[in-house]
Length: 294
Image (cartoon, rainbow, N blue to C red):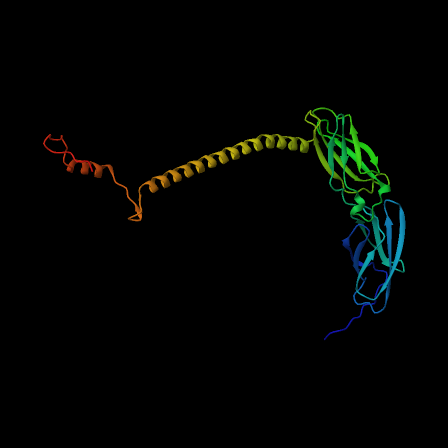
């Protein structure tokens, strides 16, 4: 035996499983399920978005019969904080969650140029990669002294450079540059950080490394040049000696060349000695033998 029971839908229940699917700089995708499974009619939801920084509210209406609802909240601000409430249009029980949008990116190519009594910070304009950033908002610069363990706010600027003076010898500093914070420092961009090692010379660590590399190159390059010159001279001397030996051998071979035989004839010292031993020794001439000169 069995019995079929059909539950009466309760429109006073809150939406279920409210959560964030994806969050960007200016939007957030949220998702939830209906208060009960398989609604048999369109359901009207009220989505309230409270800006916790600006202290403002916006309400959006969503009408659907789907059991699972996905909705995109637009026109948010980078780095903002929001409280989202979803409930049925009859003001039933609610489901809520908090959302933090993605802040603006950090400025690119932060560099330091050392001057006589100060340094200059340079960076690329954030507007080149952030369409939501306006140069009129500007940047703010902070400095951290690792020796004193102190962080200082240096100021803000709408330019892409900033002058820093009165640095102490022997102190190490970290500089950060970011999109200027709005509403009492609650909406800020991501910071770009650069370490400056003063080392008592007024140079940052990167400049010091570059200087050292330049000094090494100034020593190595002349040494390599001298080695190349020495090797070149050695090759020339060897080549001249080779040519001289070749010419001497050619002259020697030509002096022993027999046109009758068509080849060069060389005789060793031993052969010459043997011939001398076998030849009769001439001791003198007799008066009786006439001398004939042909």
